[in-house]
Length: 276
Image 1 (cartoon, helix red, strand yellow):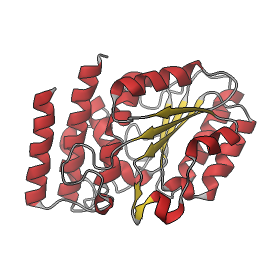
Image 2 (cartoon, helix red, strand yellow):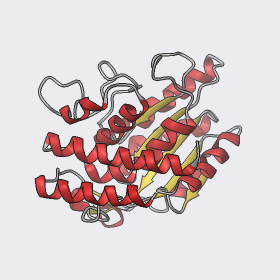
Image 3 (cartoon, rainbow, N blue to C red):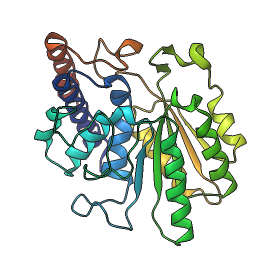
Image 4 (cartoon, rainbow, N blue to C red):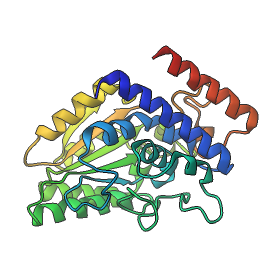
């Protein structure tokens, strides 16, 4: 798919995120917006998937380790055709299958229930190991938050993946620099992230702008060519990307826009769309 088309889809994903969180009156827009581009690239370009056959055993797998960014995952799944876009405003509503965190039992396209930070990457590593044991061709992708990697379980999983040479695994870190309590380096600095993954025998790819489709394309192409070790893509992004008053603001980690803010956010994203 052409880069321009991917950018247009990512902008629609961002509109869906804001709409769903506004309707829920709760949720996590900041990190969902920073990851909208990688969600789009994965589901529309990178992964071998079929919305009409979401449980195909040969499909590529994706685990949203930072499960609170469910609005971003749901938005791209809806755009890709796994379920109706009209269902997105039911996010977090009583009786809706679109819960606050991903649920593999009820949501088409969700490969792993997640939300307890640090656990998603462990599940992804297990999937990758299973693929190797079964001599299957599928690849496994997992997205972590840069605050999430303060969890010790992340590094246990990384140690195992490196030791087992799981070259069918791609770990993506959304390095937007902010977690719920503020800048990551002030809360509990995980830097240098790249050298940590290198120490656990990962092939590391640094992406200067994880909101740029061409840079993402190059990073995933490089990861696919790696043999004998897992890959880690460390991508710098902007929290709240695309919405003027959310960009770079830790306060938008986990709250919903009111009606006035929702209108402003949609105007911002409409302008982005018009410029594409």
